[in-house]
Length: 280
Length: 310
Image (cartoon, rainbow over all chains, first blue to last red; front, side, top):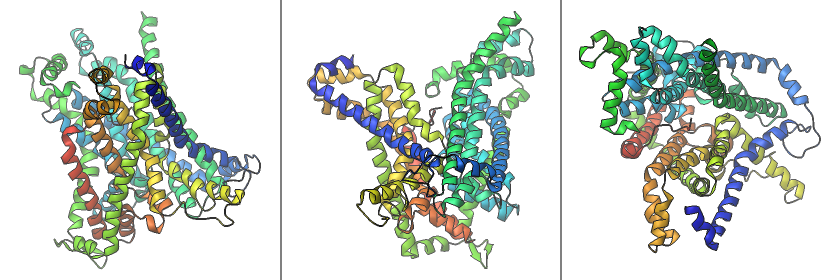
């Protein structure tokens, strides 16, 4: 083992110690701004930063009573639900031919399909803006934002479902086929239940990404507001404790959803395993 | 991945094809069914991703006359862009900032990834890795905003300095210039760099490292001659995945960069908000062209299996 070697030498131990300190500093660097943001959201002073003059939850109260925020929240959730629906269906459907058919340029197609993630959102935003306003002569609305966000979120679902499909035991499907199941029944009773965890994780990813999406939405939302757009317009005038509180809430929401996306698939898998046992 | 080896791929597709009947006998309907799943994706990515991008290409060669787009093919938009010194300077500054931020991200991420892959017991590695990616899964806007509460004129830094008596007035030294932009960009893209580098370090066989040292190599030689050459695809991927999004950054320079931290993304947004669509398209295409060139050059060494560690 390489590890033994390092313990033997003094120099190795030193390196290890130095690197551990480095890693600790990295974690501080990554979390300090977020933690400070949350701390400031409970701070009584009205500048939204230091000094801490006392603890309060009054900013949260203001967030909940602000009708602009409530409007933005409704729009955000509506858009997120629609984006989730579109990207889950489109992404799952595309995962099948991507993994299973004998495509010639499979890796090329794979790159093309993940391109919307790699390319700056700005380009997606402005190009769709031109398409909607100058070609389709369409008024900008939450619907155009849904389309724009779906272009960006669908590849995530696709990658997740494709990864699960890759490790799928094809003999299960063949067995179902031998037992007389047609394509629809194979899909309904064999394939989809086995893919369910990945599809669910993909849906949660899409929802969270949509909730937080900023740049594409900025171009396509028109006169409406989503929460990130609302925060952006507020931030331009300076930091306020209400925005800190709203930001902390949004952070907590995305973290919870992401945790769900990681944990839920395992739970679903276990639950699905229990079902046939009970039935049999 | 099995994708790269033809033998595995053949058996795999034969396997999956079996439930649908033997390959030779398959009708055109079942063949069509095989590709039907691409249908919705084709509409979404075709109509709403490729067509708009193509449109931007066209627009960059068309003209705006009295707020109307005229379909006359011309290089005027590009000529205009390069005739304004501020724009050219912004373009170079964008490239410069992106290179600096990418380099800094990787230099910070490498020791971290090395520590994680080599010194941390396997069972803790995953948790520690998720901790690094965690901020990445929160709102991008809020991560930029959180720095504003630290660096801003009323931010934590200034408050702290005033409290200690170092300054009497808030200084905007921390904010509204390129260093602040680079700092925040490094913060934003660090998880990317760390994840990619870790993925490539994790696969490394440390016995090779030991073998090199048994044969008399110093740790430094072993690192440069054995480890880094094998990490090349991972490093390339990290560079690409950090550099490309930074090229198109808008929010970070907008919020923490101020007038002196402007990047090309801000120019593009200004053009489009001023209804100068054709000029904006030309500026956007300059970024797109840079990205395409990068991807074409590094195509072979890219690993795009799961860039987001999902």
